[in-house]
Amino acid sequence: MVMGIQQVSLSADGHRAAVVSLRDGVPSIYLIKNPFERRLVSDTLAPTVWAQRRLRQVPRLAPALALASEALRQRNPFLRDASYTTPPAGPLLAASEPAGSNGTNGHGEAPDSTRYGTLRVDFRNYVFSSAFDEARPPRATPSYYSSDPFAPKDNVDENGRYRPRRYRLYFTPDLVYGAAGYDMLYGVQSVTQMMFSDMLGNHRIWAATNLLVDLRNSDYLIAYSYLPRRTDWTVAVYHVARLLPDYALRTLYRYRHYGLNLSASYPLNKFERFDFGLAYMGVNQTDIGNLARPPVTRTLFYPSITYTRDVSVPGLLAPIGGHRLALQLSGSPGNLLYGRQIRFVTLLADARTYTSFGRGLYSFAFRLAGGASFGPNPQLFYSAGVENWINRRFDSFPIEDLTDFVFATPVLPLRATDINTLKGPYFGLFNAEFRFPLVAALLPGPLPILPLYNLQGTAFLDAGAVWGSPSNRRLNLFRRDEHGRQVLDDLRVAGGLGLRTIILGFPFRFDFAWPFDGRRFLHRRFYFSVGLDF
Image (cartoon, rainbow, N blue to C red):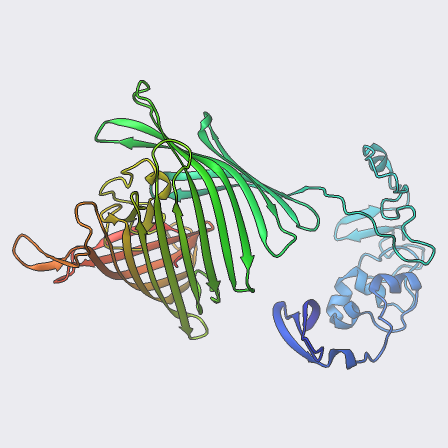
């Protein structure tokens, strides 16, 4: 059975229309040819069941009554009353027995009562109170409103046309909620977010905060977006604070990142856009373990431009078709005011392509990414295993200079390394994955485990390199080990298998990787993380 139209899309010439309707409860798409030339057999809608009961006549069956089976008509009191040519004078007859001849409904009860099983509701002396309306506090309304806010005064002119009125900007809350996540460097994170917008969606205010002890140790952001034009403008002020240990000096540092950011997004079409950004930011480092030590601060400008093209086809946990491309040019000309100058230029590129078969159940995903940073203070890239890595392992912490707290960028997925095993101002990365379904549902048996749905598997190959340390700027793909054998150096390669599923609404990933040193596969590594694949 097909019923209802939820969405309509009309062709430019008006000769075809695509509509979304429910077919046996499943959304389906239908194509209508020449929709404006179609004529209905009758221009009068059939009366509803309620209308038939009020009119006390049945010119033709209501839709609900026509579709109901005979058994359903007898079980449902509304449909049963509508089945009578002349509906009863009182409310619903409550049971399947006919009305008695003694002025009762067959149960010895007055006709102004309704029975549902053993429950009887008597409406003969029921009065609907106006206490709720009287108790409601009065609301201030504009002067041009009458007592009915939906019938304002002077709403139309002498010709019957609606009078134009100036649009009044009024913000209302769109959402207020708390979010939690996991970061491989800083652990569990949480934030409270609030968003407000006007009726037309031309203006948006977004606020986010995570208060901890005081403002110096808390995260907070306030942003305003101007959206009525083709170019979307956003201005934001923010503050981020993190506590990180220094095991070598046995102390604790507090890092703060704050600033003012102006950004613009210009869409070329539905699938392509340019994003521009200009930030004036500050970075502060304070030694919490030794307050006598003066804090260190850096300030700098950070402009950026990004081109994005996305024609991918989304799937359940990852895209299953199309491709994505992003190119970014960013850098810092220095602070232009005082203090140490931080200067660099960075170019990033990321290309991804997807193909699938078997109705999208089986898919291949390929990714090629690279980056290079130039200048006296180049940006730092470091290997990081997988995104949101829970059972993470550190080679060292990826902060060599104060500004690395902001600009140090992880290279992932590279499932052959620990965090910060490789680092430098240059990187290249290639990923290939084959994704396939495993189990539709795994229900709990004798063991009280949670049910798991849509378990998917993946076979992957990662190959990447990060190089350009101050001691060696060259890329060395191979080196000689202590036995004189040639093995991989800056280049890291790993292959393996993985499992993907959703537990309590969070996407979890389980990866088993075998690093390859150029001669043989090494011991297996296990990566447990939260998030979606590229």
